Image (cartoon, rainbow, N blue to C red):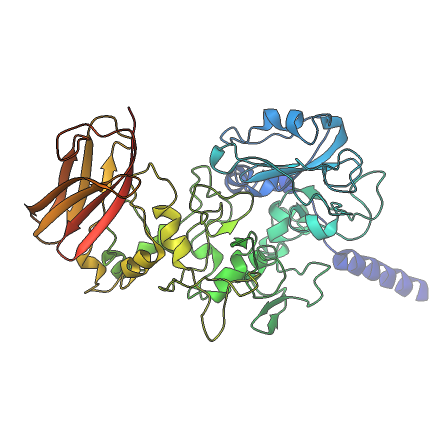
Length: 504
């Protein structure tokens, strides 16, 4: 009898042990059979390519729509002597930039790399443009690719063991890139049960093993993970921040990348979840359809009172400018990075949005977290001398942005923005502007040293789109020489100036 009881007890114990075992990771491929639609969308998103392990000395494979100049990577990496056989993995390569981990576990080009220590190790290509190679973190003595780096680039990361044969202590992961289980948790029980939805976490709240505060800090309050909760922002925020704390980190005059959680929590939209606007399985870049809701769907009144002269400018162009940088800056203004901000709020003054030491976005009693007009206005208006967007000083931007969404906005009466086409010009320029009411209008054209070369005064123009033509002559009828000219239109109390290049 005792033997029977002991046998039953042991069987129950073994059964209980089996049930209580921690779930294991099975890999994203295991999800494809039952969740083919989400899986296929995920394959074409950026998440799978956050880190690609090199196998058989072959370059990683990216979707066909990605224009990352991959064929030129190895021939231009470092001093040109590195081969794919020397590379253990590629960080990124999908949308912004690519870096390379050598077989020694070190970022190629940094100080302790066994392959090359002179830089030329990060390639930037946002928007499908060749933005060139830069020397990423050249002087770092020990830039190894360990858990502290790949915890957000891979799935199932652990501080124990090593992912790279021959290099101890790097930590391990179960899948290169951010896979299904990075967001839904280990899937072994879900798969073995035939898809029981109670045996998978819809939203996998986790804390990284090196997170000393045990969660995410918002204004001094630390939120910790809850296995019974489905807090999407906690899940996304685990990786889309840099320090697990609320300051929006900045460097070099831009918000750092991976700061979307910090930005959202400090913004007026902090009550939203990431999936309010995003489909987490789909991409946004490369003409993806990962945005599921536009600003106008919730802010119809503000959208209808948008007093901007160009109808081509949408809400995100001002409220989500490229104020963050992952790989590179773009254009001439100095205020266009390669990642849209999620701060949303705009403060209309001439002050910077950053703290005195430039390490974070200011968020205190003197200025709440908000975008400055440097990024909101000057990022477009001063970014290209040859486009049809008028040049603008910061002082002019302050006046123009005041009351942008107010019913009786001052700017509503000042939609006088000058567009010129073509630009550059050869023999004739069409000057376009808009009047909200009829006015006597004047045209003044100055050369590059400020001399007035042509003027036309008191021409009556009615409300709406209006035009002047200039046949590149001065007031005496003589052709003016090639060079840069400034075209100024004055209507009533308002004026606007734009720059044009004359070629011969």
